[in-house]
Image 1 (cartoon, rainbow, N blue to C red):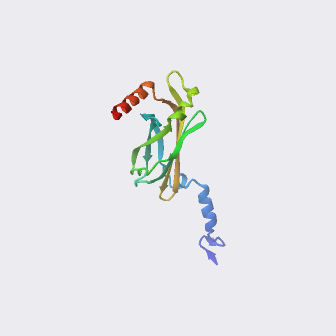
Image 2: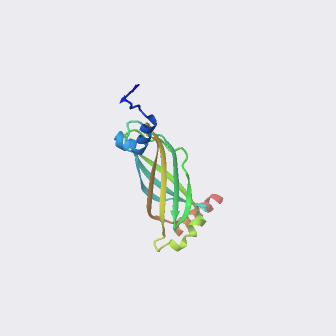
Image 3: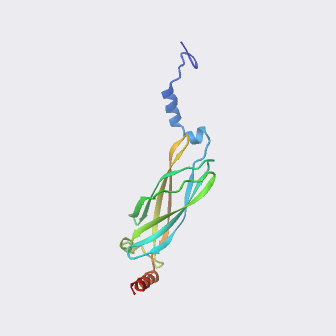
Length: 175
């Protein structure tokens, strides 16, 4: 019997699939780009007696002509080799087609945990941090893609002025 590719040369689907797995299918075969992301800002947003809330802004570029849903966005904020907060973002918005989408992520850190990092606090009242974020998207043809991003820098701690402003607001609501 003569095979599709000539005498004695049957198509071995398993071998073809194994070979396809060895290639970065999206990049080498289709020549498509992957979504890209970067953290553009991490800063102090709010202070209360329990938490300090930081705001992270993330820029995500979708190079495809179709929108891409983000199935999951996980994050971890670390300082001085300690995890300050981690979790999953609730219902991230989809990435618009051929567009750069700006996402925001609120990071609520225990006030007492931040104070325990006092040894890292310098005269300018900040701490070193590392923020890691993973986006899991599903791209047609290639399947699930995880886009990891991270950023290192310094973030400000609430100042005494912030705390006094909070105390004054609290007094005003009790009257």
